[in-house]
Image (cartoon, rainbow, N blue to C red):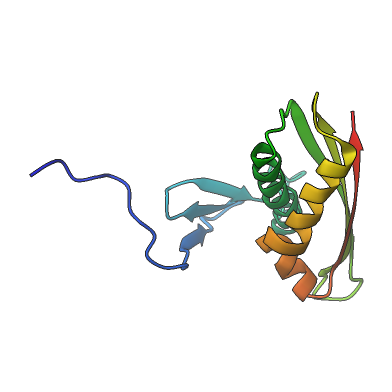
Length: 151
């Protein structure tokens, strides 16, 4: 018999994670692959947070999720990507739970051969069809707008 593989096949769409508090901040999240995420807040009033808050991580996750889609779509179009970035601005509800009510994403792409129209098509496909984070935010009533720039 050959060696067994160290990787596991995902046989369902379930995900698993844990988050722990050990007497002080940050909270430490651990996914099923052993990767850590640190979450912070200023709740202990000992100074500024050293890590992102859960809402900041969610906001960043929208950009990361959509950018992964956009990169994959542009690569399928055989476009050369030098740099892509997303700047985000979000509004939150005034009352608890202070959910995101609107998010605007400004995507910037540096590419020698991608047109603005191709870039916008990739963004539209991501935000409207593929990005799971965008779908969840929209499902909660959050309006997501975006614009694209080539640099």
